[in-house]
Amino acid sequence: MKLPYAEPYKIKMVEPIRPSTREEREKWIKEANYNLFNLTSEQVYVDLLTDSGTGAMSDQQWAAIMTGDESYAGSKSYFNMKKAIEEILGFPLFMPTHQGRAAENVLFSALIKEGDIVPGNSHFDTTKGHIEFRKAKAVDCTIDEAFDTENLHPFKGNVDIKKLEDVFEQNPHDKIPFIIVTITNNTAGGQPVSLENLRAVKAFADSVGKPVLYDSARFAENAYFIKMREASAADLSIKEIVREMFANADMMTMSSKKDAIVNIGGFIACRSKDLWNQISMFNIIYEGYVTYGGMAGRDMNALAVGLDEGTEFEVLNARIKQVEYLGNQLIEYGIPIQKPIGGHAIFVDALKFLPNLPREQYVAQTLAVELYIEAGVRGVEIGTILADRDPETRQDRFPALELVRMAIPRRTYTNNHMDVVATAMKNLWDRRDSITRGFKILEEAQIMRHFTVKLDRV
Ligand code: F0G
Image: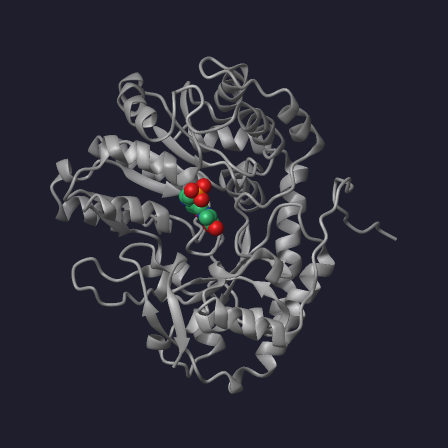
């Protein structure tokens, strides 16, 4: 008999978690104004809010923590991180920041002006936030296939080159500072971008003389999918694919809380010394001196090890297999999810789950709240609340999809936890006709309202 698959690690330390009762959860979520961000972690049993900073570090990463160099300037840990970025990603220059959005803030302070246009593939919400905060506009050029959850396109994160061309045709080129590619494409369902598409974006960018920025939070998962789905890369190692990918980028921002498997950290990397000089001023103002940028030496050390380990096939294989394990159960139950199953999360198609709930009542948020009440599982809405209002009309923007994202932290939960999540979703699916009441907004912030929005049942 063929031996079954098992994870390439064993567990050295555990953190207790506690299930709660339905009555407790109903009370807690009401007190939280039906905003899952307002729950305390103790009120959550299986926390799938995010895979960001919630992964379990390896013994080698913890060992690196103990040898962190906390010198203000010129720390050894900075040079460990520099070496890892140069060797693994191929960028000669970098600047640490405390996380991904900080990298966006620093880089965009140098590159984006009021009235600019930044085309890309489904900009992540902090990316869009940092663009719109500068009174510039993010234009989504993701391929249409991404918005059909049943379409089995292997690279639904791809940029539609035709849409990109249209943006350049319709706008003065001096208003377009760069093109951004998010790998993997989080908002569209953790969907990868192919190597072929990365090359096509770079060729187009070269033809119009614009730099390409990769938002690289889940670049290693992207490389894994390239290996599994793109014939020309099947025999390459993950590290070889990563080098190929980044050879098509001029700069990158990174939230290291994902694929570098650390609890905090980020960076900007680039090839231009001029750009590095420009952003160093902003880094010093916003983050810290250029050799620590808001990170502790110990965290830079752990990040350097994480970049190396996180680009090993076995580590990625175990991670993505667990996401598939959950996704395949949901598919078996007939629950509508974004397919093919993405890298870091399962995205449930809430419009198909609750087709009769009006969109004005925040369909994905309603499903996410029901999931919490059912089993103490915390997912997150990727829908109308996250999409914010249109900055000009102040009307709700209804995105193409209403999704509930269940992001799986790396190496944190077992497949038994995944069984609880799948069963909870199945119970909701069986009683979906009884979910007829959504939510209305009581209070909200101007940008990124999802973090603090207060809701009540309609
Ligand atoms: N870009 C992408 C694609 C992301 O997914 C995130 C964060 C960021 C940038 C910002 O990085 O959080 O370190 O400041 N995504 C998390 C998530 C929050 O849950 O998907 P950050």
